[in-house]
Image 1 (cartoon, rainbow, N blue to C red):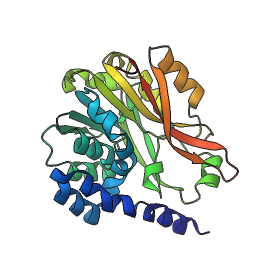
Image 2 (cartoon, one colour):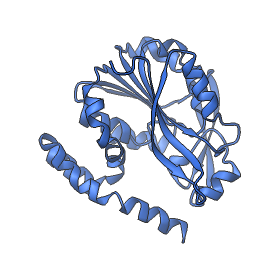
Image 3 (spheres, one colour):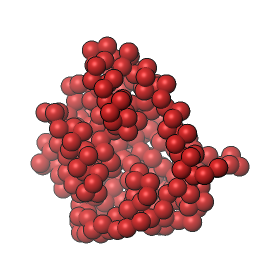
Image 4 (cartoon, rainbow, N blue to C red):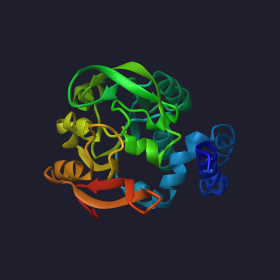
Length: 261
């Protein structure tokens, strides 16, 4: 099947959920209904996180840090479920950052930074992708091209790279913190640059690959060891993606310091 058709059908499968969501949040009904019609991409993460809304709403997170914010769908989802939380978002790609600012412009407790996060300060290049969510500082591996043929590098964009710890003084975050990382294979580098920030983090939610999708990326073993040695406990995985033969490609993983609290 043509890759573009496959992607279209995948997104079409979310339509029933998009139609249902406004009814699940009656106080935000008209806003969500309008967003679902005019900006459905922004609703994508709300669809994904909706089954876990009770957990998100019950936790006493004071701050949400959205690393690899893309166009703001995760920040938007958290805001819908947690109106009281402070949100800090990081997105290096110019076009994505512009969408992010527009999508969250009316949020008074939201702050965005146009920078890529890593383990050291400097500069680099983002490999822009025909499928924007696959853009990364790392180059695509051949495995990625086989599994997701609609993803193909098209251009490069120079970006600033900094450590999350460098923004602690400016953000003045309040713990406990919920940290989300989705940076297409660069997750461990982000964590290495967030040693001080992690002291205030209660839960880390991040996308991890089990097959190499980017050249030089760190897989599950490295991520798990890094977080485990710093007191985080693996709580579960979500949104699993598989090869045609059934091998696990990637998943979203949740790590928490104090499970059950």
